[in-house]
Length: 139
Image (cartoon, rainbow, N blue to C red):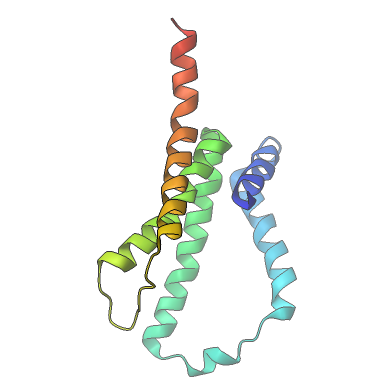
């Protein structure tokens, strides 16, 4: 629900502003809200490798959200949000299937698997429903 709300708000903003401008506003608001609540003391203990990973994650986030904002310019918000909803599932799948030293995968129960199946079905439905509606109207 949060992703869909965010996508709808951003879609409205994109009528007046570019994707870069909307993302700059979101980043500035986020920085202003969360900076006073942040505790940077754990960063003192990071190794060089951990710093590189942290920097990579920061740039990855900037690029990913920039791509998300640009996708909203060209596609419907429901379709973009449906694809975004699959990202955590892909992460869980990779952690479950590929053993990574230092990362312990949580066991997935029946309820978790059912929830994942519902997300996949909902995403597929949202991504394909508009195409089927258009095709049905052309008959």
